[in-house]
Figure 1 (cartoon, rainbow, N blue to C red):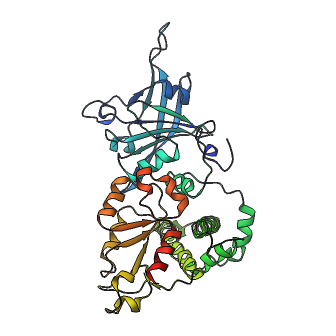
Figure 2 (cartoon, one colour):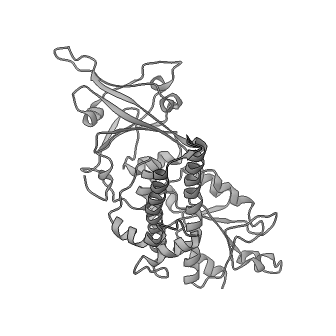
Figure 3 (cartoon, rainbow, N blue to C red):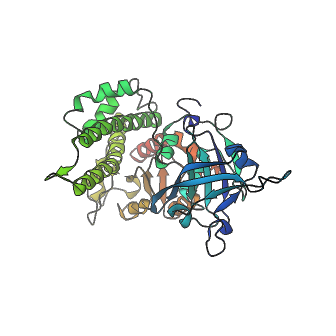
Length: 404
C-alpha cells in the first residue's frame, strides 16, 4: 500500500462481463460465480464469508448501494484431488438490477472489505472503471488485476473523481494546512461561492494561469474541493452534535432537511466553482466575455465571447462569436447547451468528467458540440476519442483567433 496512490484504497480487482445465466432469475437462480484462478488470487484458498458493499453505477440514474455477504468456498472440499471454487452472493437490489453484458468488478480493499461494482455495458462509468483499474479488455471470465504490484496510479483529479463516485473517501495528506486556511470560517460557516473560490486560488502558490492554464485550473479546483470537504466535515459534525430534537421528540423531518441541504450544497457548489475559476483564467488572458447573460427565450449560456452586446448585434459576424457551456459532469445534461445561443451553430462544452463513453461523445459530435476539458483528463478517454477533444489552452487560442 502506497499513500497517495490507488493501492491505498484497493489491493486488487477481478473483472468480467456478466452472463445472463448469472443474473437473470428467469434463467437461473444460482447466485454464485465460478471461482477461476483470477478469483483465487483475490480470495485465496480458504473458505471465508465477507461483508460486502454492492454498488450499481448508471449514467441515467442515481447509484444504488446495498450491503450483503459473499461466501468464498470450495464446493468439492471433501474430494481428495479436485477443487471447484465458487463465490456465493445473497440476493440484493444491486444484483437484482444487473443484466447480461454488464461489467462486474469485485475489488478488495486493504481493510479486507469487498466492493462489488456493477456498471451497464457501454456506459461512461464502464469507461471510467476500466481506466481506473488499468484493464483494456474485459472477457466473460474473471481477469485479475493487482494494484500495488501492477497498475497503481497516483491519486490525481481523475482518480479522485472516480473514487468519490464509488463512495470511497480520499484521505488528504495536508489536513493541517487546509484547516489553517478555513479557520476563519469554522464559526460563521460557508462563505459565498465566489469568496470560497478566491480563497482556494490565493492558497495555491506559484500558479501560472497564463503559461499553464490546464494545470492551474485543476490545481484551483482540487484545492477548493479539499477546502470544501474539510469545512463541510466541521459544519456537519457540529450540527450532528447538537442533535435533532423538536418538542422533546426526535426531529426526523429536520434531519432529512439538513441532509438534503448538505447534498444540494455539494451539487451546486462545484458547478459555480468551475465557472469562477474559468472566469479567472479568461481574465488572466485578457479575454472579454459575458457570463450568464440572456441570449433568447430566457436562455443563459455560461460564457459568451466577446460579449452579449456583440451577440445581439446582428451586424456582428456570427463566425466571430463563441459560446461555452460549463458542466462539471455531463451525464445527459450536456444536451441543455443545444438550445443555448441560437446564433452560434457549434457549442463548446467544458467539463471535468473523465472517460465519457464513446456513445456520448459520438452523439455530441453529431450535434456539433465540442467537448473541452483539462489536458490531464484526456488520458482517461479512449485513443479514438482523444484527437477530437480540446484542452483549455486550445480553447483559449481558438477564442483569441476568433477575436482577431
